[in-house]
Length: 115
Length: 115
Image (cartoon, rainbow over all chains, first blue to last red; front, top):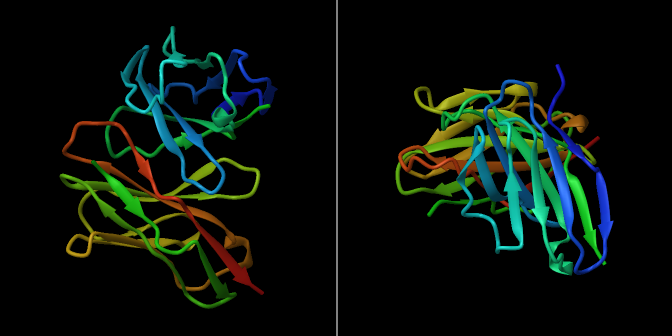
């Protein structure tokens, strides 16, 4: 079956612009996560969805970052007024249930470069 | 708060020799522990996890890890390293008792298997 997919694979934008990053989780997975991975670092938690609702958004760095999952499947991470410091690889992951012991399945990531 | 430490930036091992990648963790309650591997230009892949029960867990590609509660460690091991094991390895923890979905990753350890 298909894994987690993310589009675009690469995004180059200018400082101050708005970007949207898309994640398509594994079919049937109810939990969806967004992470940010900077060079030389591990994935940093941003937000977690259970179904359509954001169950934990404590990792979003500021109010320029927002994510939605309107139908409980595809999710979009939105970044307003991008800054150079937002440059990173944005990872999406999904898991079958919200159980705490369930492993996550990761997408290939979107590499965001803010010039 | 929960945290993960991977004390070695890089581990070098000769092909055929046993390998160990170290991980220690800190959580308020009891942990769920995970190992993921990241190959170049590919997404993170799940290797193994500790949920409860037997302290020695076996995972994909011949890897295993031992949960040691007294030392708060979860070191990754393999009896005989392959060149194809060369990759970036991440340890991760989730607080089982906190009711939160947030997973905290370490900064990663680069494993280099020398032919």
